[in-house]
Amino acid sequence: MGQYRLHCVGESGNCYKVALMLEFCGLPWEPVFVDYFGGETRSDTYRQSVNELGEVPMLEADGLRLTQSGAILTWLAQQTGRFGGRNDAERMEVLRWMLFDNHKFTSYYATLRWMVGIAGKNDPAVVEFLRARAVGAFQIVDKHLATRAFLLGDSPTIADFSLVGYHYYDEATTIDRSEFPNLTAWIQRIRALPGWKHPYELMPRGAERNE
Ligand SMILES: N[C@@H](CCC(=O)N[C@@H](CS)C(=O)NCC(=O)O)C(=O)O
Image (cartoon, rainbow, N blue to C red; front, side, top):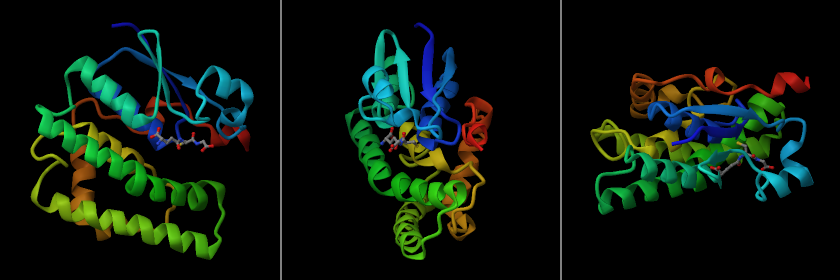
């Protein structure tokens, strides 16, 4: 397998999901810094040559240019035979959780953190809307994790790496994660897996370059 190049920025938990999988699989990869805070993802050049969706992450792998963290995680699981589920039923379960993550779990929480903790925008109505949606998603996952170590049971999968993507950052979000004990224990369980690294150890940060 060739070298993997992850176009990313450290503050992005969506990029971190992929970086974590690359680390857990022990694959040779390097980050390619995207100046998200400087507007690079909104430029025509980026959309024409890197990702027409105008987003990070993008993974260059084996001559492919892969986008959408869930699709990239699935591709990596297929290539490596790791963390993707052991049979069709498990693979479907992985997909179900990753769709939930992209729609409800990461999306509201990441936007909340971005607004409150990074951009410093505190419109009370918007913050309350995002907060309520994120808390609702946290409650669902917390309940699910009451009876299992990882989303699918005893072993971690890419579904775990997807959902956990924003849970090692310290920026303010207005949500106290300790109110969700099963979620908190699961975050620590993933942190304890061999190969785990913090997002800022894996990917260059962007905000400070644009201060
Ligand atoms: N569902 C996508 C979300 C990717 C995403 O929203 N990336 C953000 C950074 S975390 C981004 O590049 N946003 C640019 C924009 O929306 O303009 C994924 O999981 O890859």
